[in-house]
Length: 126
Image 1: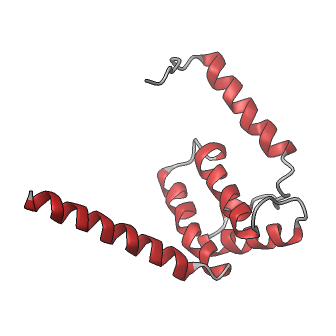
Image 2 (image 1 turned 45 degrees about the horizontal axis):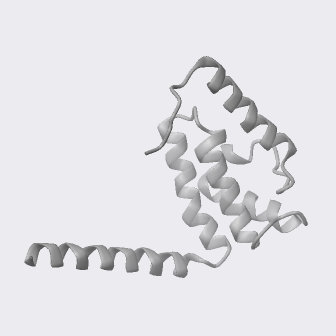
């Protein structure tokens, strides 16, 4: 069982400072200001441009770009309206496209879907 603390004002403020600190001091890559404000295609293109220019990324360039997008969605953009989150989620497949990864992503989704339907059929027959 997970030990979770109830959210208090100090916990929340500390968490917000942590996100700000990571965003300001991260060695991952430098992002242009306002990068996450554009369309899904512009976000994907901007992330690719940033990672390709950076010498400080870990893993593959694609992994670094996707990590930055996920970081912003999950932490940095915590207070974003749902429409903004949806737009940023649409940037994920666009990012796969600009890196030439769309087929791999589609195959993984298809494999998961097939495995889930196989499990469901097996359960129904039991």
